[in-house]
Length: 149
Image (tube, rainbow, N blue to C red; front, side, top):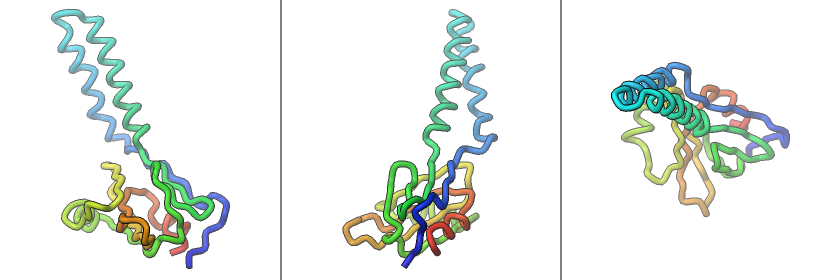
């Protein structure tokens, strides 16, 4: 059986890496150039606003992973650690296969495109139709240890 302390034993916010924000910088000039022939101030303002919205969405949709009080939480989903049967870590080609051809459509997934390491949590809850959770993390070994595996 897994032993997890009642204090927060693991916390991570899986933000996009900084190069992920570089393509967002193209939003501003695209809108500006689109509106220049008609109304330049509208292009400037809409470019700044849409760029800010995209950055906000990229950050707000990032997963927060925590292990507290015997529960694992990834984004808005929570499961008791007692229902975790196994923890597997995938990187490189294995992670690519897990996200693609090996993925079960019933699995709970949360990927961060700029994070290449995945953790697969096998679920043993008979009431839960989800066979496993598959999600991105930058610190898979710390997470595994916090879960007691």
